Image 1 (cartoon, helix red, strand yellow):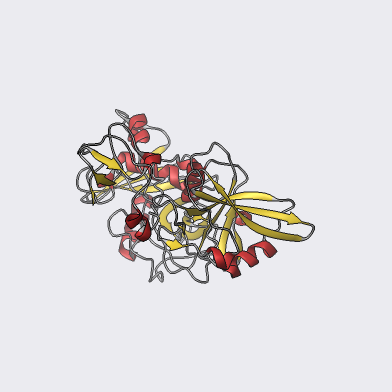
Image 2 (cartoon, one colour; image 1 turned 135 degrees about the vertical axis):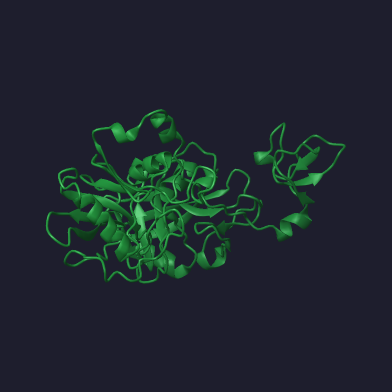
Length: 390
């Protein structure tokens, strides 16, 4: 047995009949030059050591309007987790994408304590079913929680669930919250991952008390590149431009979400403005104030985010994405930076009085916010570390 790229056609027999196709095989295959048929199952020697493969969902191509939260009520804090519950129902693939655009992952119920806590604290009005991260993608006998992208084999005995004899057609786990009066019991329902059945979603991530890092959302922008191809955005009435010392600052006074602005910034190779130092902030303010009538007073997104961890803020400048560690040169509004986990972006309130820029945190898809952007230094469509994968 060996691993090969799926594009190679080596006459292999797939050990995964559920994802085998006529012209390509799965990456884990059995060499057999005399056969062109998929085996019904992998040999027992493979099954014994087999562990489910957990892959992180890639949602970078999703529309910018799908990302983020719309208020504090969308996040629940319970059972040593931050949780978000969807209103809509999805198939399994859609459930993974939904949690991904919330910068979360599907629910893990890895311990009896978590199971008991959820059954008591999740206030459901009636019995409901939710997708979880539990699945058996590779093996037909082993299941694991895959929400974090790391494999954690499910202990069925601890959870009091009956383990299926085979995962054929039962590769994904749906949490069945059965409500009887004031008591709720969580049972496992084994579902075909390709089923057309739709269920609601519970997404999770570490609570603010346990989180240690913030990540920058790196979104792809092929559609936005196509939309803006051949357009000189600097000639649009909603775009204001300042140039000095080889640097260009732009303001888009449209009211869009942080994620949509980031996608159009990606298409134009113009990242959202970062203020990593006092010198840079002073330069930007002086440049904008040199033509005071050009930029309307108001609120503008900056590049900084605290996605996944309210206490850790990071500048997303597409180069080194540095942490905002020394902010003594920045002027924060009263009570800021906010610890509200749904406020994952940073914006500036631009006024006509010093310090001119006052920072505050806000939901990344908040309405009524414009954006400041900057030319990308040493960054082209072929050299920029962010754009390499686009």
